[in-house]
Length: 111
Image 1 (tube, one colour):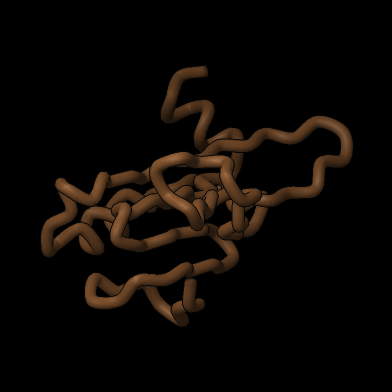
Image 2: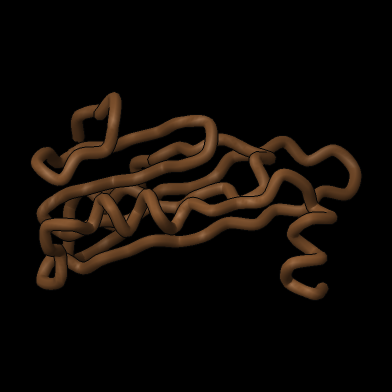
């Protein structure tokens, strides 16, 4: 799966940056976004035969080092292949509202 410098609707591949991991393929679109800016995005290759429907499974994830107490908050984004339509990239980008701090997140979510 090729590495993309930016997500695009016209090309299959993987995109990784400081806040997100995103994979696009014939199987659909799958991504994860770090809402608190505590980790970094990666797209991992799963072991062979771990998915009987798709031979080359990849798993978008957020990787973070945990020292002491740490909050992690992510948003998962997925569209199956039969539902992928033009415009999905706009939805991916608009779903990336995060928070600058744990306190801001807790106040907004009332937790």
